[in-house]
Length: 153
Image 1: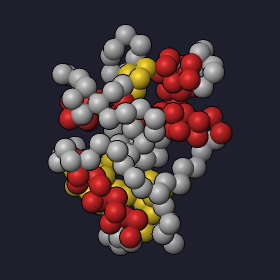
Image 2: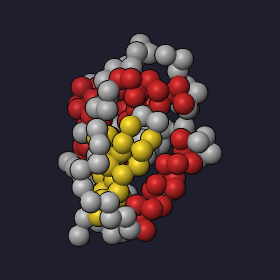
Image 3: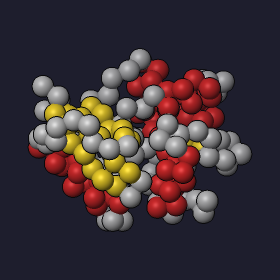
Image 4: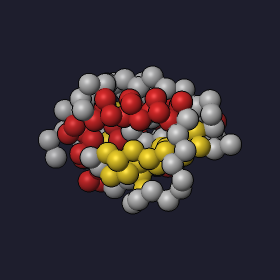
């Protein structure tokens, strides 16, 4: 059974989904739409998100269950290696995957990331240092990068 919880962050509401064993989704929403039914995984996620936004947490330690194509999973695994306060380009990710021409595919996988912030797709920028895209909106991406001390947008 999927459980839901909401976290009201400085960048808006984040809807959290758990399967009881792992976090399976975290996405930006305008407002809560499901019944709030947190389980242990969701309560742990809320605690860690609170610590992240207060500047006390730099590395999440949560059970995650990512579902996607093998390529998407490989991109998301690369995202998890980007340290707090640092960025990588789409080109860097493609190179790390052994396919330097896969920048657009990396961008598509990045935009399909089902777990925002925790799987840090906001830390991926263009090779020339521009923000690129972000499924949650560029203003959120800029805010998150400023929060982590990486960008002065």
